[in-house]
Picture 1 (tube, rainbow, N blue to C red):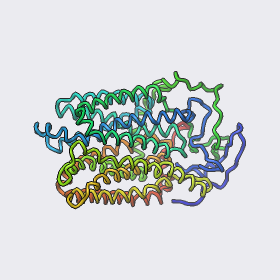
Picture 2 (picture 1 turned 180 degrees about the horizontal axis):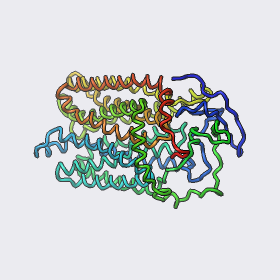
Picture 3 (picture 1 turned 45 degrees about the vertical axis):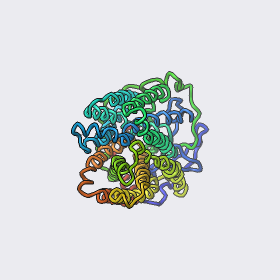
Picture 4 (picture 1 turned 90 degrees about the vertical axis):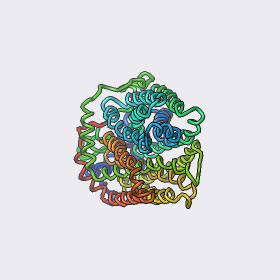
Length: 533
């Protein structure tokens, strides 16, 4: 990565009593390379005086939005991933009607696939219509699908209900991060996304931990019923407290185009303007209750797919996608196999206690918050302060080194423990569930923040690629896990997963070194008219 300064001329000027700075455009013309520090932190996107700009929401309202969308994510992900602790309740009945273990694991793997497909549907609609209406629609689908699973009397109906549930829960992977990044500035992005992820992880883990005892106490059917009730609560909260976050900004807001009389300079701000209630409408309860803002733009549905196809050809995007798909797939593979290990000799855990093994993910989320959240944001400001204020997105990749090492070690250890359980303590599987989840969270947050920093004008398509296609890739990894283990054993299968984790980590070093050159070449394919969401 180029470590030389990219700004030769910066001139501070006074404009409307704000700290406005002119940065020579030719020095930040690489997509993602921005001026972040000039005495103070520069706001990116450039702030507006519009009270209805999502970036201008009160901090308490932003916090409330984070909590509500985290609740939505928690319920969907818990109903999908928490089912691993309930498999034992369904296995006897489904085996009795001729279903084998592979059929039963489809109840875990197919919803993951359809989470990805759900993003392919939800994100284009979110771009065309708005984020709020898609969130509310997804919550309604979650209520109905959880009810369908609760009332299912056959394997086929149960699988159908979980597939539909996956379509809804998938919005937690792309739509939720998109809403989060739209209400915070670049220098806050990683912290706030990690806070949202931490809330989501802790709540999901608690729900998952108690999945087995809850199902034993109230029946698995009412476990789904509880999910439907909580989804209803989530819908009411989202209806009243999550406003539309779709907002149009010029390219100059991302330091991607001229914004002054001199076409060779870009104006940036270190102060936020006072809200203008003369030229803009105020934010009111009524305005926040709108289902969408402006007219639906159906042409954007086609655009997001064409843009996604172009982006997936970028080497740095393809690397981030593959790393996410692999780590999610391995995480699911561990989640679908640990239960049968800890409930069998020599451990002999009761079926109702199997889900307790997920408790370590709470610790994971608390460790991940400083590593990938405010630690990452402080890191980019520290580097920018030593590079004449310039921020390079590749700095976001540095925190990924530790989770990659943890992931390699954990995958190999899990394979050995599952192969020779008499030689390993049960804590091996508790560690694996928590530690490889740490690897996935690192890959997820680092990849998303890196790519959003690199190509801010392509936020929607990037989230489609990472969150939708990784679901498809992880399905391939987890779908074939049973025959893969049968052929190679746990040690062989998870040894391969450990090797692949390390290999993509090594490729990340090349992305770190050559990322700016990649962005300089690929940025030309992300040029738009002077308007961006």
